Length: 143
Image (tube, rainbow, N blue to C red; front, side, top):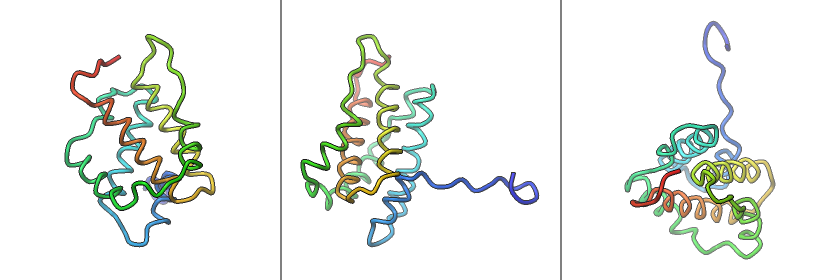
């Protein structure tokens, strides 16, 4: 505990802090959404209900708006770095939701702790959105 019964301030997720630094103007709505998503990834990777990863149409629209002006600015090097974390095999019968959450969590932590181009971060966010959308699609078999 911090001073006089207050809980200590948690440091922001390294990826969240890095993205905040790269923005020319504040994007508080997007940053709050990203914070929630990073917390959900961590919780699901540790065993929470995978439904926490699903997000509604408003959240998806907010991410699309944020990434719209950044999409396509990355290059093959940015993609290769991100895919090195995300493109891992999940054994048949494995828990695909938790495996995806773990890969995204590990990539977010790693990218947040490295000096990377902002375009690498945009590509990671683009891929994260694609993975989360795929997991949340209707008819997707839950583990």
